[in-house]
Image 1 (spheres, rainbow, N blue to C red):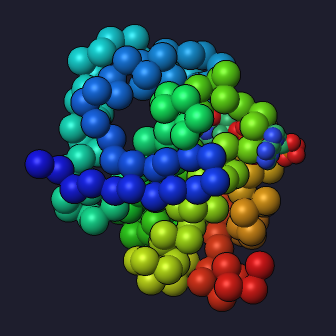
Image 2: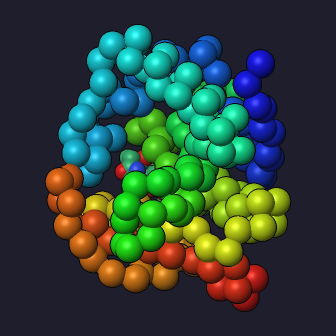
Length: 180
Ligand SMILES: CC(C)(COP(=O)(O)OP(=O)(O)OC[C@H]1O[C@@H](n2cnc3c(N)ncnc32)[C@H](O)[C@@H]1OP(=O)(O)O)[C@@H](O)C(=O)NCCC(=O)NCCS
């Protein structure tokens, strides 16, 4: 039985990844528009999606945290995912950090759901997990994502280039969060 989560915002429920989310996540990850600024690595087979769900469940056990599924309260439908991920890849001269991310089905863009769920993710990180800082990355041309990060109080730290293109690196500290 994997670790479970239940966080509520005004319009959304954030909960753990479950195998039953496979079809919704396939719809999300097979959409080229969704992957436009993510290196264009769309996924088209359900087995890869199921493996990914299991990997997220392992992260819950190992790290105590991982991305969450977003559910719209009004319909009970999967909207996409959000949340914090513990990263250990060498990056920006640190090798451990908590990354804020989100990925929504296209029909749910433009409703404020990414921002609403990102705020809840940060609140969980700072209040429940007592983190000192949380980071995020976005392709410099991913206007909507950069907007979300600024709206939730992230500070732009620098630009750097990786294989998927130029990225902006953002960070928010616990103090920034308290005074935002
Ligand atoms: C990045 C992504 C999550 C942004 O989603 P989004 O829906 O544009 O983001 P938000 O939740 O902030 O909603 C944006 C708009 O909803 C509108 N909106 C409508 N109803 C609203 C409401 N009730 N409350 C708040 N905003 C509302 C707002 O006007 C807002 O636009 P604004 O900031 O220009 O005012 C989405 O484009 C996506 O999933 N992209 C593909 C994956 C991806 O690139 N992920 C990020 C990788 S770094």
